[in-house]
Length: 81
Image (cartoon, rainbow, N blue to C red; front, side, top):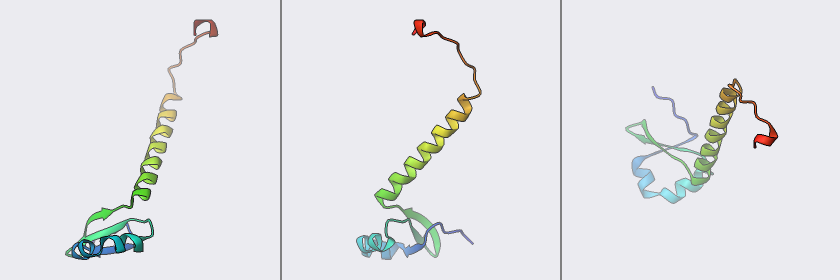
C-alpha cells in the first residue's frame, strides 16, 4: 500500500480531460495522479509550489545558521573593515 500525500486524487485520464476543473477543485493544494490506483505523480498549483520552495529555502538558511554558529570565528576590528 502506498501513502498518498494529497487530499484529492485523480486518474491520469481524468486529469487529461478536466485539467482546469481539477485544479480549481483542489483549492490550491496538491493533487495525486493515480495510475492503476497507485500514485504516479503529484500536480502542484504554482502558488503551492512557490510556498514549498520558500519553506525549503528557510530550512536551508536555518541549517546554515546552526552550522556556522559553531565557528570558527575570525576577530576583526572596525578599522580593518
